Image (cartoon, rainbow, N blue to C red; front, side):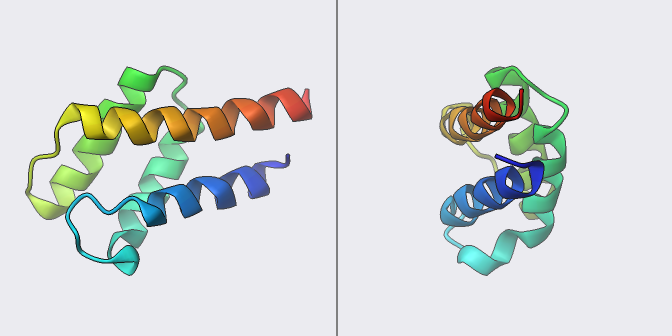
Length: 87
């Protein structure tokens, strides 16, 4: 899986995730930030905390870390799948 395809899968997962019930098109800036951080972070907790920071900063609403952990695991699974195929 190429990096571009990995990014597409990550974007798709994040578009389906709607923590504030704002609709799938409401999070484009946040999705871009999370995908960029996905390339830098490998630990689920670190990524979950960053996801929470990004979304909370934009919406000034709190998200339980557990919700962010769920999407974090899914995103990291896509990332590690891509790494295994590329290597």
